[in-house]
Amino acid sequence: MNLNRIRAGLLLAALPLILLFLSGCSMNRLAVIGAEPILVGGQSAMYRETDLKLARDAMPAQLMLIQGLLQEDPHNPRLLLYAARGFYGYTFGFVEDHDRRRASKLYERCFHYGLAALREEGLDLDPQHAQQQQVQAAVARLGRSAVPGLFWTASCWAKWIDMNRDDPARVAELGRAAVLMRRVLKLDEGYFHGGADLFFGVYYGGRPPMLGGDYRKARRYFERAERISGGKLFLVDVLYAEYLARQTQNRALFEKKLRSVLSRPADEVPDLALFNRIAQAKARRLLAHEKDYF
Image (cartoon, rainbow, N blue to C red; front, side, top):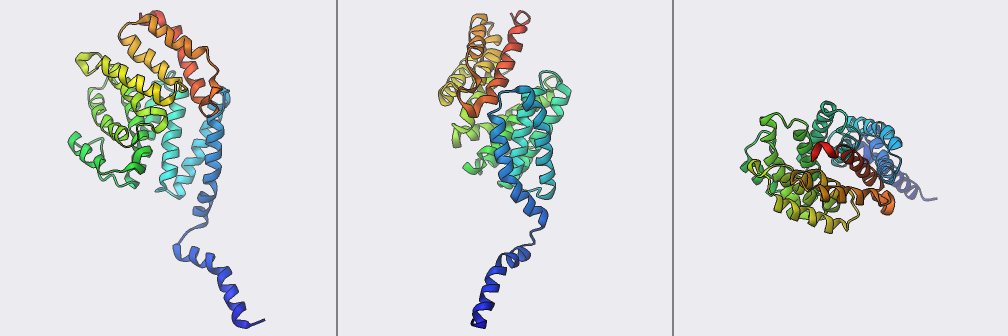
């Protein structure tokens, strides 16, 4: 066999290792790369889970895994988004209704993961401490690839504020969170089943007019979220009942929305099964406290 051909073959076989060495990629980074498909599969399976106790008990281990991987690859935008989305889902579904103080801390963590993902997209300021006009100018420079980061950062931020609604300084941040979500509306209104419209339904429906609420706007946003989701995301009706129907003291609509949610199978869209089971649990809690609201 020709010696030059042997050398060429050995060089070709070693090329991936040479490139790996030159790139400075560690074995831990390789482990992160290898773990990402497992995370994606695990999240897909989690979204299809209908047993809330099983999901509640499993999610912390998944979140710890993501945080461990981030220690090895702290600027990985996909891992940062997994963390933001995961902490939001766990806190919204299993913590905030029972322990607001703990929920506040978890939403804070969620916000910082989302913000770190946005920095990887080029956000060059801290929106929490900048002026609103500065935030508007900064997010206007972000493109469509930043939509997930914008969405989850704004969602986590708004919930963190909501857990501290007695603090006027924190409530004053809400307008800046809304700036991020308005950019989502402009770039990709359909992201996460119309989640940006749902955000603004709560944003305008959950406050009296003297504090910036606008029930007509809230109704329009809820209706748009309903159209975009095709009526398959039960949280639209639950949040409509919790924020707009309750705020306007429309008890009949409150009951209608929540009982409709409870009458449907959570897994009619398998990929929304967990979200819909969480929505049903919240619907039951709201109905159990109905006399306190009306």
